[in-house]
Length: 273
Image (cartoon, rainbow, N blue to C red):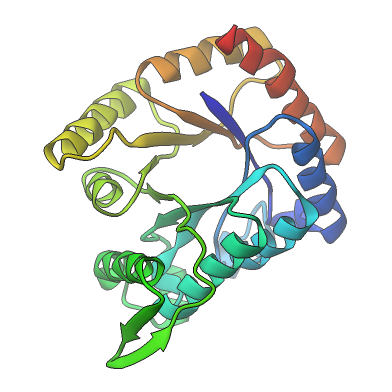
């Protein structure tokens, strides 16, 4: 199992200084990945915890690409209906190019009605927009010459397409993960819910003649008790989770660094040893 950390690009933890210090701490550890989240228009009555402050995920990853050298960076998840397909594909290609092919593209269809309202995008169309955008991203990374709205253009630079991980719940997310991506990125839930969903994902991939997809789970591990964290991670690996993103809170960069060290020095060695 590989391990990542959620870097808070929201609320009071999202200052330039803290984002930089946390990213460099992860880069200096053996943590595999750093992930950021996506909200674009938090309504005033739903701003508890973040105060409505969110850094754009793609801009944040471009910033982190220059601040790090080793750790992989990802969106957990980028809400595709919030952005036009062509600028999104250009952002993705640019970050992939400038990061040295370290980008991991987690995507989703979105859920918050207020954000769709603010953007003027019908929430009822989010599934179709997500599928169309994923199809377009694949087209962009498959050839230098692409066509959109009847206009041909050159899509350059064209680095290797980053792996795509689809967030969301069954059945639509599982279908998208198999059709368009390399894996599924669920939020942690009860094992009785997660295990059959992973089994269904594996069945869909087998029916499509594709390799078994990865499962990247977003959730908190009890890092204050490394033994319990090892036990939980082991149970998740047994049902098919291939990557775990610790999304627990941290009060400052020092506690973020401590989380990275606990996973690197205690949890991972116990699983692999």
